Image (tube, helix red, strand yellow):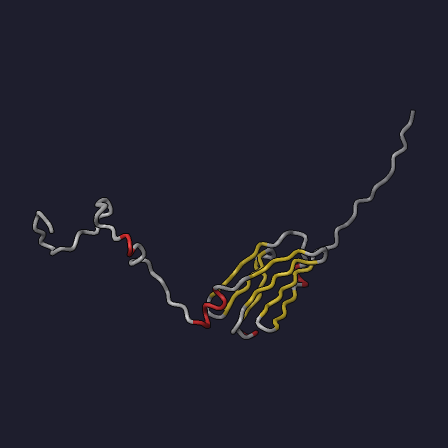
Length: 134
């Protein structure tokens, strides 16, 4: 019950400084939320594992329900690996400098996308023994 009548009915104002105007249970009511369909949520929630081997960096993405034609693998600015789905879903990975960007390979099997980024061979330094005089 209100002691002071309001011209706006029983609804309180949305004043940020009024602690009683905030609805604790509806904190995100004005937040724009897009609804996702099962087709689009498959890629948004895709789990991507990264593994480094002596020869390459290997990325594995679980993309169930997506076809090979609906997934794109691109290299941007010679250092960023970009994996995207047809409905504007994207994951990006900055790659180290020791990779062969021109030899990136991708394959898809049973809903798992595998991207392999080969590493450059590590050149071993030439070591020359120096005689110690004296």
